[in-house]
Image (cartoon, rainbow, N blue to C red):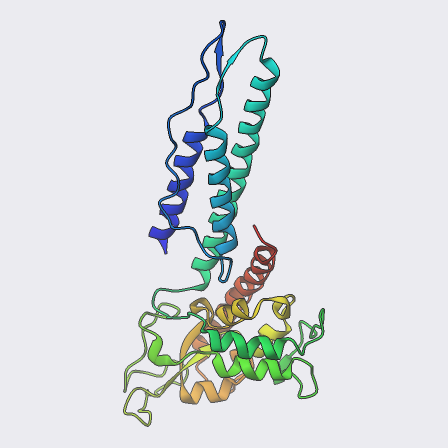
Length: 307
């Protein structure tokens, strides 16, 4: 991800330098001169926006095309006779400079949000079938519909069975969390616990085996998916962004089967019989992740508005 970001920002710098070929002041008539060809983006023209940040990429490309058109114009003028044309040329240059700077800033911001969602150790790409199923369910939720937040209490969060968002919740819940076999990196700084590792939630407990002989651990939402559905703006996300956020590595952790069943959609602070130090650390982690999710939802909503 970082390499990709560097390439795009570096590309923007090259285009900016090319644009700074402005009109030359001359005191006598001159033959119309054309500037040297300006290299365009080495990237192939992107398709119409279908994934996150493509709209911002297209905006940078449009700014690049505007620069090429501008620099292909005559850029030598006789002053004072051609003062108006000279001023117009430089005014357009300033406008294009501003458009490029805005496009670069928006792309940088979008990539930053994407990096906070997608972790290299978690293959969280969204499939066309997942988007199709989620879109169909989301279309049944009235525009502007929300669930109360904050709520929950000791019983935790739930999407009521009579809620218009219930079907959407069930669809996203079937997708998130993803299969634990897809996770290759650490979550919350911890690799997948091995069989017979200590169960941090229960003093003296150990990680058992699952039906396939692997460690009996689950991918757990630090902040429950049901609570995410209650968060302001979550139901306004596009299906793809909704799934990506639900599967974001920043919001997942490893829990033993026992701890995960005890937690359900509640806060770890409401589980009885667990190690108090683990419980306190979990509550602090929940607060941290909750704040991140709320911020990411707002960032995604703004980015959905386009470049």
